[in-house]
Image (cartoon, rainbow, N blue to C red; front, side):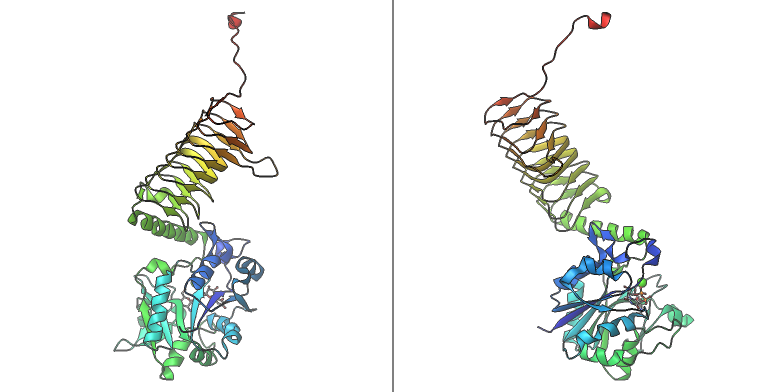
Length: 419
Ligand code: UD1
Ligand code: CA
C-alpha cells in the first residue's frame, strides 16, 4: 500500500458564522465539523494526519487532540501558503497526500478511496475532485484543453467572462504525489486578484513541467458542501439526516417522516422496526427487529433495545437496556435502567436516577408490571413477575412475584363540601 498523508486545512476564519466559537468546532449531530473530517481521514487509512491551524487554533486543537500533527499558519495568505506550512512534515516522504478542508465534512470515504485509487492507477501527480454546478459562482473553475485534459484552475476573481461560464468547479479536495507537490508549491506566486498563494496554481505548474494531472467528477454534489454560515450548517445537517435515514430505510427500517426523524451516526436498527415522527436517536444506540419507536421519542446514548420493543410518545430513555417485547408506551423517563423481558412500564413512570451527585441504577426483572405514575428511586431492584401499584414511590427493592404499593391511603370525608 502506498503511504498516505492527509492534510486538513483548518486555519481559516469563520466570520460569517457570527460566533465566538471557531467555525470548525460547530457540530452536526453532536460531532464537530473538524472531528468529522479527522474521522474521514482516519477511515481512509491515513498514515499521518496534519492539521493546518491558525485562527482560534486553541479551540480546534482542543477538539482534535493528538489525532493529528499540527502546522501553524500565522497569517492567512491562501490555500497554497497553508500547505507550505505543512511541507516540513512531507519532506523526504513518498506516496500520496490528500487535501481536505476542515469545514467540508460530508465527503464519503468511498469517494476519497476512488480518488486515491485513480491517482495511483493512472500515475497522476495531481487528481482533483471536481463537480458540475449549474451555478458555479464563487468556485474555482476547471480549465481543460480541447481533448479534455486538465490544464489549470482559475479562481472566480481572476476568471474571464468566458471562463466564468465553465460549470465544472474545483471542490478543493485533491490527491497529490507528495514529492511533486513539494516541488510545485515552491513555485506558487501571489500574482492574482487576491494577492494570495493559491494551491490551485500547482495544476498549471505541474502541466508546464509535463506532469500528469487528472480529475474525478463527484457523483453526489452534496458531498462537497462546505459550511460558511449557520444556514449552511443547517443545510448540511439536513443532508446528513437524509443520508443516514435513507441507509436505514434501504436496510428495512420504516421511517414515516424522514424530515422529523433524527438518527445520529452509528446507530443500528433491525428490520421492520417502525419509527414514527419527531424521534431522535443518538449515536451508538442499538435497536432490534420489529420495534416501534415514537412519535416524540428521545432515545439517548447507551440504549440497547431488543426485538419487539415499544418506546412510545414523550418517552426519554438513556443508558437503558430494554428486553424483548417490553413496552414503555408513554410519558416516561427511564435512565440508567435495565428492563427485563415482557415488562410493561405504565404511563408517567420515572426512574429517579440522579441523587444530585451520582447516577444510580434501576433493575427491573422479566414480566413486571409497573403501574402508572410510579417513581423508582434508584438504586433499586424489582424482581421478576413483580407488580407495582400505580402512583407508588418505590424506595426499596421489590421481591419477585410480589405486589408493592407505596402511596398514601385515600380517605373520603363524606359530606365535607356541603359544610
Ligand atoms: C478554494 C479554491 C477554489 C475552490 C474552493 C472550494 C484556492 C485558491 N481556491 O477557494 O478553487 O473552488 O476552495 O471551496 O485554493 N484556508 C486556510 N488558510 C488559508 C486559506 C484557506 O487554512 O490561508 C482553509 C480554509 O479554512 C478553508 C479552505 O482552506 O477550509 C478553503 O479556503 P476558502 O477561503 O474557503 O477557499 P477559497 O480560497 O475561496
Ligand atoms: Ca470556502
